[in-house]
Every structure is written in structure tokens, then in C-alpha cells.
Length: 454
Image (cartoon, rainbow, N blue to C red):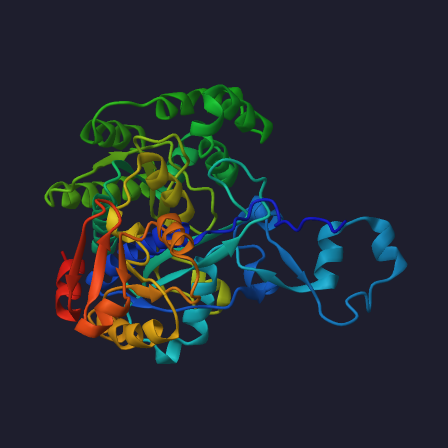
């Protein structure tokens, strides 16, 4: 007996109904990006590992899916390489390419490679899948889509303000209540300076970024494990547990970071963004969250994260400012800032809250019943006219029993059925049946279109 096929853990198939929902997500995000002047690009699923490695920190590098070299991929690998058991070194010999981990690093590579063709500031968006060799769990997949928007070639904080407007607009269109969280890596660096641990900024941000997942006690354990003294960890506690309004937090942090030029610069940037957003009447809350760290190493300024308020799930959007990313590829001094919508998590949130508009889940609107060759020949030009009017319709391909064709319409939730027999052909009309009410009426093509358009 043949083994039943399956798919890798952390990946999913999507049915026609699910694809209709996903396209609603992509189309909504795409339309908002376009409103703000962003242009679409695409990059390959595979990148050179030299492009990807070292850009996401040690944890991120471990989650890269690596692609074996084609042909004799073992060529040049000796017995000593296998015996040493150093997987990273061995992978470097066997693999030159990897699946992209996100869309930001490939975008930085794109900017450097095509810099002579770009008009700066360059506003791009990109909607494509990414892959991470992570442990699959609720809301976390190994293959998932990101919907990124970035601006490069400008240091203005107005870019951050507009990106937060985009976030607010998108989730307002979806009907999802969210909290937009804002922090700044300069603030985090200032905190590390003030506790005498500037050299451990990466360890500190990685640990603090897990606060929502593992709680303060385990965060403190991780801070201790990375070498922070008990005194330094104690100094971080007021920050980790800080509450109050955004204005209160800004005042407190200005006092706490008075001795750090870097930290005060981060507070100044957050204050600018929060003040600008406060005058725009956003529909969703914006919170200055000092525990937000965004574990990726390339962020250098404002960082963002979005949490759904009515569903228990991880971040559904994130991003931030990265001043040095393109410098890794030989183009120093080009600042950028971007956001990424997690389409798969948004899909799950919309499903749980049942927020999809009914019209987007409706496929075929009208089914023509097939009674035979003559009737089908009569229906074909009518189908063409109805489709030209923008109505989604189909002709059942076989002259099957009426019961089977009606069962097909019910299974696909087709709201109307067109019946054409001898009498209808003689009059040049069709009998239109409403599958919900059972009501029938004899109509010509113009009447058919009028009814379907409501």
C-alpha cells in the first residue's frame, strides 16, 4: 500500500476558500502601500549564503535553511571535515545558497546591486514567502509570507511616522484592534551604558525581547547567564516593569538616561514620532514600550511591533530603522526604515475573529446547468456576455443528472443557478433560480446581469 503523501512540518496547503481570504489580505496591504507611494519589487527565493549569514545574529543564522550545492556536493569535503562534527563549517562547504530568512536583507542586497537604477529616497514594497528552520507552533510557521515596506536614502523621522500610519490604516481596514508598540535601539544602548554593560547590548536585547513569552524571572535568568552582574540586572528592573502614559515614560527615561548621549538621542526620536502620531487621530493605540527590543542586530533607531488585542498570538507586524545594513554590502551611509506585516498570523487572527467580508469568500456567483449539447451551445454566448459584465460564472461541463448539478452548486455555495431547456431556448431567455430562497424567474441576459449585480 502506497504511503500517503504529506508536507513538511511548519508548512500548510491552502484551499480555494483560504486563498480567497489570503488574497484579501495581500490586496488590502498592497492597496495601502500604493496610497503612500511605494513600488513593488521581487527577489529570488534563494540568496547566496554569503548574503544571509551574519545579518540576523547567532540565533538567526541557526534558523537559515541551507541548500545543498548541485551536482557532486561532497566534492572537496574530506574525512576530517566529517569527523570533526562542526556542522557550521561543514554546511559552508556543502552549501553556497540558502532560502531567504526575511525580505529586508535581500532588499539591502537589491539596493546595492541596483543602486545606479534607483531614485532616492526609494520606497519599495515586497510580498513574498520566507523560510525559517524554527520549531513549528501556534502562529509560528517554517514557511510564511511577509509583506514589507521600506524607505531607503532618507534619515527623516517622517518616514517612521508614515509607516505607523500605514499600520494603523491596514488594521483599521481589517477591523482588527491592535496596539502599536514603539521603542528605540538607542534607548536600549543607553540603558546598557548606564548599567555598565555596553558590550552586552545584543545579549540584553535578545533576553528582554522574550519578556512576553517567558516572563521577567526567566528574562533575569537569561541576563545572568550572559554575564550581567546582579547589580546590573537590578538596575534594569524599573525599566522592565515600567508603567504609565507615554509622556510619563519619556520623562522618567530622560532622567534615567541623563548621562547617556546615545540614550537621550533615542528618547528624542521616540518623542518626535509619538508627538506627530498624536496629532493624526490614529484609530489604534500607540505605546512607548521600553521592553520592546526586536532581537535582530541590524536595527539602529526606532523599532516597532504590533500586537492584536483580541487574540492570543505573537507579533503580527514589526520593523524599525537600520542605518548600517547596506554598508555590509559595500554601500555605507545609506539609512533605511521598514515594516513587515506577518500575513500568516493576520490570516489566523481574521479567522478567529471572523472578520472577512462575505463577498471575498464568494467564488462562482452563477452556475449554468448543462442539459446537453444544444443547451450548452445556447449557454456559451450568454456566459461570455455575463462574464464581460464582471460576473463570475461557469457551465457544468457534463450533461449530468439535475440532482448532481444542484449538489455541486450547493457544495460550492453558488448563490444562483441558470436553467436552460427547450422553452428557454425558444424564448431566448434563461430561468434563474435563487439557491437560498428557491425563487425562480425567467429573464433575458440583461435581466440576468441586473439580478446578479443586486
